[in-house]
Image 1 (cartoon, helix red, strand yellow):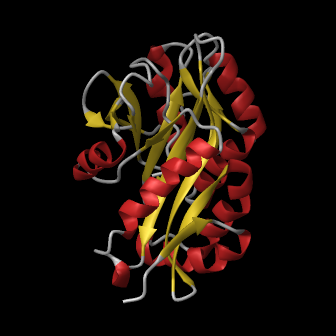
Image 2 (cartoon, helix red, strand yellow):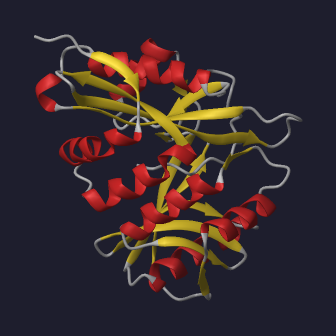
Length: 271
C-alpha cells in the first residue's frame, strides 16, 4: 500500500475534508463549510495524504488563552476532529496525525495542547500518546423548560464581552472572537445560539425536543436553573440538559497534568 505523508492544511483541502468529515462524523456540508471558513482565524490542521488525496486530518484550534490569576495567560491549543477515512484505518494514521497536531500547536505558540476525547477509552490513548490526563469533570443536570425570565440572543462579540466581565478574576478559558463565532454558528446550525438571561449566559443547541446547554455561566449559582429553563422554553424545547462543572463525575477536558486549574471555567467544547 502507498505510504502516506503528513503536511499542514491549506485552504484547497476544505472540499475534500468536508466530505471526509461528513463520512466520519455525520455532520452535513453546511456545518463543515462554517468551520473551514473560520479555521484560518481559529487555528490550522494537519492532513494525511495518500495517492495525492487527503485521507485524514487533525485540527488545532489555538485561539485560546487560559486567563485568570496569572500575569501572562498561556496560550492553549485544542485538538479537534481527528478523522481518518474508514478504508485507511489501522495504519497508524490517527496516531501520526495526533502527534503532528501537537507539534503544530507548539509551533504556532501554544504552551500546551488539550482535547475532549469522544469516548472514555480515548483518555488512556491520549495519555499514552501525548501525556494528557483528565483535568476537568462535569455533570449533566436536566430541568423542565419554562419561560421563567426573558431571554436575549447575542452576537459572538457581545457574548464574549459579557463572558469576560462575568469571569473577571476567575481561572477560565478565553476564546478569540472568531472561535466564539464558530460556537455561535455551531449552535445556530443545530437550532440554538448564544443567549443571555437572568444575569447569566449560555450556549445552547437543540436535539429533538431537548435543549442541550454546553456553557452556562451565572452571577449566582441559584440562577442556573432559571436560565436553563427559560432558554430551553424560548427554543421550544420540553426539557433542558445542562453540563455544569463538578469536582468529579463525567470525564471532560484532557490536558497535561498541572496545566489547567481544577476551578477553571471551561465549558466551550465543540462536541
